[in-house]
Structures are given as structure tokens and as C-alpha cells.
Length: 132
Image (cartoon, rainbow, N blue to C red; front, side, top):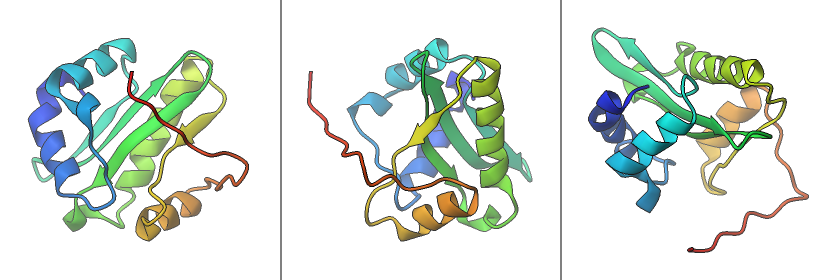
């Protein structure tokens, strides 16, 4: 993924239920994230169209996947799994051995996907946020 993919990727994210976008997802915010995490975020093309995208990065210790989305017309073809696999390979190459994702509690379809590709829910953690 590059900054040049921003408009198409945002269109996909906005049209995908279960993807939560916020103030950090501006053109500049995503460009900054991609610069800090080069070669870790990916897009998938099919029939000259954007079929999927994932934002991936690391804090140097743990990896994080954000906003994995596959266009409805291209689901169940292995694109989501391939995007995750590419990101995991990039994290391993950077020496990162554990990755986290954030799934909205009411996103049953998303949770099923993540379970199918080997991720486990954790009940020992609570996500908390604060504006800075």
C-alpha cells in the first residue's frame, strides 16, 4: 500500500461494515503510518479494481493489523487470508513475533474470519482509549 492508494482504500473501508474509521485515518495520518511502517501494509487488485486492503505496523515489539477489508464481490477467494499472510511475513522479517487486531464486539462476520485464519480471542484484556 502506498499513499497513492488512499482514495480507493478509504472508499473500500467506508463501504465495509465492521470497519471503524477515526481521526487518525486522514490522508496525512495514513501517509505517516505507512512511512513509519514501510512494506507492511498491502492492497489486493482483481480485475483492475481494488479488491482488498490491510493496514499493518509495529511499535517495534508487537505488530498490529488494522482495517482489513475485502470488497464483497471478492470475498471467499482467499484475498483476506493472503493480505494477512503478507503482513505477518513483513512483521516476522522485522523481528516481531506477536500481532494484535481489534475487532468490534458486534462484528460477528469479522470475528468468524479471524477465528478461521487462526486468531484467538483474549478475555484477559480490556481495550481502553483516551484522547491526547
